[in-house]
Length: 324
Image (cartoon, rainbow, N blue to C red; front, top):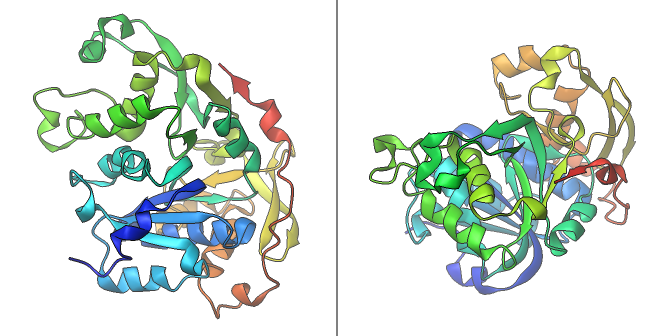
């Protein structure tokens, strides 16, 4: 057994919570993710960190973050069916927490908040599955017949599950099938025989299941640029910090000047030399990631600023989302 927080804490019920999955390769990233949650929410919401092969030293560091007792560490060794990798762990996470969390926001460990997301939680509490667009649409061919033969020819918005929020009880069927398919994903070693569900990682299967389960009316699609901007930074886009309030950063997407709500390093990772080069011409992108990373832990220069303000109302850009 490991030294993570006792399993009994998982039986408490929370109306809203964040969950982040990480392994050692993403450890630098998860510190920034946790720092950003602390910046905008303090210790007000439960935060689950799902570790997949984290070392004892890494777990100890996570237990000492500024989130304090609001953070619960879980290890994938304790899952009902131990996942092979982080993609599989992401698919199983909501199922593992369905008895503890009503509305869950799943965050990748290469992503930071740049605003409160109360508006997103509110949409999810009304039954919406909320996520940003990722590079347009996705189409399904006959390879997807294992889900249902009616998927062939279907085209729908391609959602980025790096940031996805939904009510676990209202969408228990999605929660259950996303967890089940993690054992048989074609992306997995051995190609998930005998079912071999096609789809690139957890988002590929998630999008196929939305179609399989007729969930299109429940989906609320957020604009890609201001909610993840997965591919735009190398196409002349950038970020400009326009204000700071304690730990909180207000940044605008350039061009356009809309407030950046979430920042995602879904290509090269910002903490790697490749990522440093990729984002060096994108304005304040690296600054945002680096500042959030520093405030995750106590006694760092950034964490000694004023305490987080948790009363700021979320920006209204969510109303610009494209609902389908």
